[in-house]
Image (cartoon, rainbow, N blue to C red):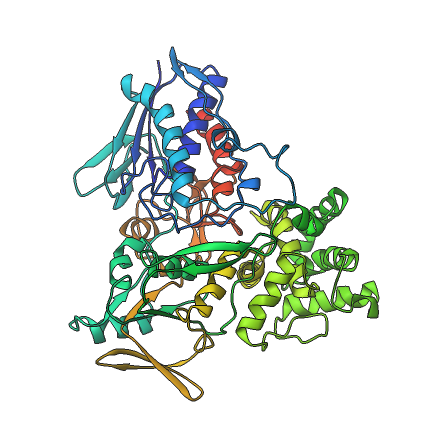
Length: 576
């Protein structure tokens, strides 16, 4: 009987699904191979990973509505006489039946800890029979190095031990630590010996600063960044001082209730001062922006054309394909901004110009110079279908519906590296609209503004000076001093900025010599690394954000349970 030793490094949701599919494929092919699975997860959160840690605060919400959280079930698997029980899909596990839930009911966005509980239970039911039969072994260890041995086997090193003679290694390591920006280095250096001033370089876990911000002392919390992570920081900063209560279901309007004086002030800021844009409130409203099957088919055919990809010098081929869909949907919406004054072609042209240049001005677009509270209220009105819809809001929602198609057609594309980088950059820019928070999050912001806790006077690129008391933020004729600063800016994918020992060992390892560039590591469609000098396929696979070819949504949990882990598992089982 053949024996195969496989290590999986990083056993969060993606590693869990890859392991499940590997065993499933072995059973389907009726392989007589005896398997030894070595699973490494530095955090100890096997199956759920750090992002879905089950102990984190309930104010950390997932940014995907439960309605589309279609994590597939696992069927029962019998392999080499071992029975691995099935496990239900997420909707069944959470007792959600969307055939019976009214489409006008507000979408729900569960705490990440709840998703973590599902993943943890799913992993436990999968791994227990394998552990009992000594087919799998768990290691709460950090992997720092990978080598290919002379016999073409792989070895991996942890602070505890080197594990040798591995037939294959799969990396599903997710978000990696990156080098700190010069601004943060300067801040850290300035305040490292000042006990009255505190700097937190990462928004997660919030337990690192939740007690510091929730005190009786007067505290001003600066938040670097004005996106989704800022919302988690905001909720954590007042978590022990009061509660939010929805007072109007239709718009999710809410108030912050507290029985005491809150001495915490939260001051977010970013380079452009533009807030995240809420998603539509419910399925009924969201469906207004959903392209037809025919539109999606034609869109995929157009952007998936290999000749068009090869000839592309920028993002125009992608934008030209999506702009007509945006225009046709926009003019069909029940209430839009002056759409009747323009032809369909003019709306399409305006959409194209805005997508390629978000400084473009047009009467169908919501002016970003609008005062911040008015801007937030306008977006809430659009998301709840109580206000006229602007073209930019429509673009963002249509883009979100088209994202799976963009990801499918533009992974492993024929575009040049420079064009590919532009596509990634464009998707990041649209994310303010396409990957926005629930309406309730924006209403919580407004509730804290009303309560005098959230100060939005400095959101747009304030001047920042350092003093003994902290960060002095200045905007126009106003200034404020923050004695606590939380960095909530999360890094865009850029492999050159990653500082983890494991990734550096991959990039600079003479025994591996993988092909890579700033966009990531080149892999085959099945996830295997390609050797630089020979184009040989190496016995090391990589799934996730560090692999070149994964453009959009690679960190989203739906992608963790997508096609890539299945394709890898099929290939891994076929390999001798």
